[in-house]
Figure 1 (cartoon, one colour):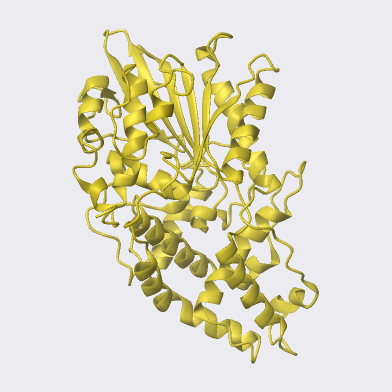
Figure 2 (tube, rainbow, N blue to C red):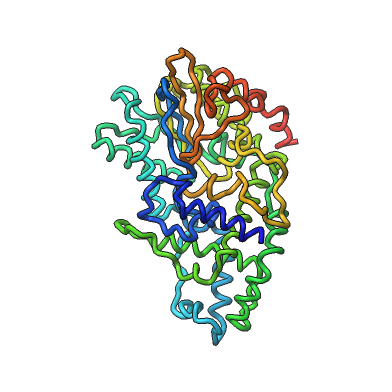
Length: 442
């Protein structure tokens, strides 16, 4: 019942178009919004203009890379599950028949053409919405974490931005932050951070056994495990985005998708919610401290003051105006879903009244939903506003949905914070994580 209610809430959003104003020409909306962090980008809310009397005078974009192939670890389990299903002589359900001639050809971790297309479109959209900020002498300043899929997303974003401007504005990718060193766009620096395995394994033990039993009935003798079932569900999104070719207007669904029900995908989504919550979000004892460095860089840019941070920042790069300028009107940083989740938590976005339960899905969809927070090509946007009242304000949007900012919101204008109040609200980051960073290495 809990899964069905959550599914109903998600589908109501889709069917009523209440959670998106973006074109759906490349998406099959029946199930793609139940794929957690593997969901193709969709708007989580309708973009609205700044309050009356205010205009955007500075912009900061934090963007996740576009759709990719499975990572090496995920690929191993996916291939194992597929080989088991292909090893049997007879299927009792025709939905498995495609496997008789199926060959696994996916790559490992790299951006797929659909992911490149997503990033290109994001660059086009950024230009269209914020072109009034641009001047030839003040181009957007771009950084990316060093993973190939992140760098490729950044360069496809710049290509889309340039194309939308008819090649008048051609911003370069100025800084690539090595993931082997200090990097505020990756979550790999906290040695004692731990992971979400205990929670996602607990949920797997709840939702996967009936699905596993069904697959093994359909393929007698396959002996698929629960872990392989999870990986086979993930083949629906991974194979779907891999099937896309440039020029297509519809994202063709993989035949793997037909093996699973809507409830199966809702359970899969909740596993992703748990993963981000207990991996680098509020549920991780050293999750949100991993977002502190980025927030301190954001505060420096917002206030045009030097970066004050002793956590993930690269102090050499951040001290140089060539590699960390403070005078740009538009900044774009390219990152990963786990790091973006840490930044949400460090900032105080999407707070939870109670921890997510790894043994039961919630009866109603909450605010910590991975497909809404960190889908492929997700973006978090900070608009600094200049208003007729004379003060500067900050507005935060996640996948186009304006955030309430209860921790500092202006009483007269909900959803915006006076700049000084916003800076003060980030005391956890400003204080270096209140000692949590040291625990990463103690």
